Length: 342
Image (spheres, rainbow, N blue to C red):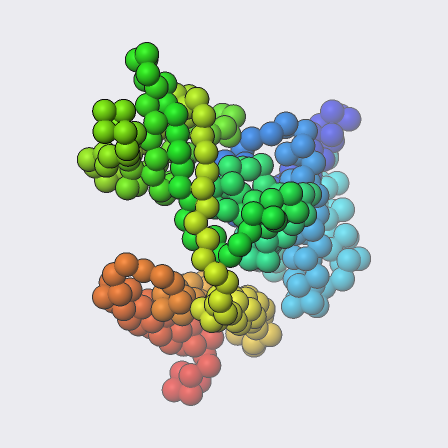
């Protein structure tokens, strides 16, 4: 194989082992109203950031994987060098069952670590509002900071903060083609961004009112949700409803749930590898354990959320808790931790 072929193989290896985990990390890092940032921006910037986070994910995965399987860099380097030489000579590499198992397991761990790190970094930055206070961590969707009142936490707008943000009222002047533009006002409930540019596309209002010149006052607009296309908006004014700060017990409890939840998650991902079991049992234990973890966290968070229908919340709590218990039992059986399956 010529020099061009060797460069092609090297490029594929770099994409798979460095850029791919970075892409997975960013896919789970950009969540909620920040999802569209995943596919926007200059290609060079996205490539560099994917490469950077891919290296972080690779280092983390390698440290965990080498510790669990008692591998060294020299052992892995020897196997990788042999595999690369065979590929560069256009030969089929000879891989035994044990090596193939290590490779597949490592790839699974790579995806899991990238996913968990992406979610963890996003939750930490958003929970502690690091992105609000430090510009370098701020997401590209600046509309979210204005609409959710988070801009009040910044130094420039801190003088406007009199309490905890509760809701946002939006006043709009809309061009509808008539000589007199319409003036509407309502509570902001949702908004959408353009898939291509990330610019504001539409605003969704509830309890909407319009200004009537004949009555010289605002009158309700019939309907449940008033949708305004932003390209029709001439001017927009935001009014933040704030409540006096109090000790938020539920917020503190949610923080405890997050911390304990991620400690449990690390245990689910790491502990099975220290058990003297078949690989299949370890993988099944991790898969079922992750499923139990998701439903357990959901059941713990339901009572800590504000909801308009407590009955539905109680039902969701019971269902999530029941499913979490079932999958926890299945996990213990797969890992042979229950006495009767020894």
